[in-house]
Image (cartoon, rainbow, N blue to C red; front, side, top):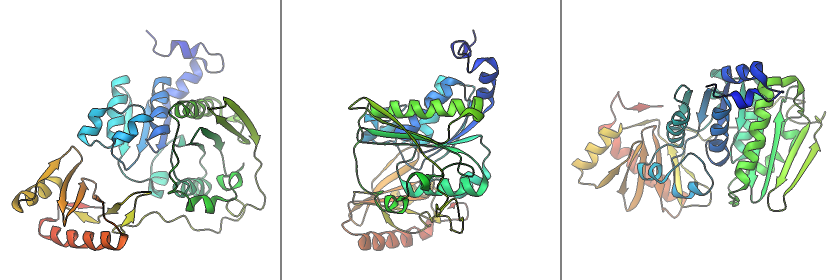
Length: 345
C-alpha cells in the first residue's frame, strides 16, 4: 500500500509533489506547542527528514497543549526533542530525525542543511535571530505564533519580501515582553499549526506560487479568520540597511532567570558527566534522583538539576544575585570531578 495515496490524489500535490515532500528537510525551531503538532503533521505528510531544536525537558504543564508527549516522558525527565523523536519514529520508522537539545543559535541556521525553517518559538528574541540570519544567508522560513485565543501565520522570504521587522515595526519592544506570561487555548494550537504546515507543504511543492505578502490571523474563540497584505517596508531598519549585529543569545556561564519564575538557568562551559556527578553526590551523601538526561539534588538548601548537555537549573532562589552566588559555589565544588572527558561546550 502507498502510505501517501490519499495525498497524491490532491491535484496540487500529485506524485511529483509528494516526491518533493519525501526528499525535503525541514528545521523546526521549538518543539513545544506548535512544534510538536507541526512535526507530527509534516512527518505524516511525508517530510521524512526533520531537524528538531529545543533545550527544554517535558513537564506536566506541557501536556495541556503539546502533542507527542506523555506523562511517562514527564516522569522520565526526557528532553522534548528526544521524546518527539521517539514518538515520531513510532509513526514512521524510516524517518531521519536529527535532534539538538539546546537553544537555537546561529550555527544551527548556517551549518545545517535544510530546505525550510519553521518558527515554532515562543519568544521574539530568537525570532529576531532567525529573521536576521535568513537575511544574511538567503533562506526562507514560516512564522507562526499563538497567544490566548489568537494566532498568526506568515511565510517570510526576507531578501525579496517583507521581513519580520516589516511585519512588527515594534519588534524591539516585543523582545522586551518575552517574559510576559500569556495563556494559550488548547484548541488554538492545532489550528495554527495546521496553517503553518499548509504553507510549508505549499512551499515545498510549489514555492513560486506562495504569497509571501500575506499574514493570516485566527481567533479560535470567535471563529474568525483574517488576511492582511504585508508589504516590504523600504525604510525597514532591518531588511533595508543590514548594518546591524545579530542578536546576542544567552552567553555561557551567565545565570538568567526563567520568565515568571524563581528558576534560574546557566549553561556551564565544562560540567561533570552524569555518572561522575552521581558518584560525587553519593560520596558526599547527597540524595539525588537520576533521569535519562539529568540528575536533580539539593544544594545549599535549593533544588538543582544538571543536564548531560551542561545546562544547570536552580529552583526557588529569591534573587538573581543569590542564584549567581549559589551557582558559583556549586561550580567550585564540581571542580574535583570535572575531567578532560567531561562536557566541554
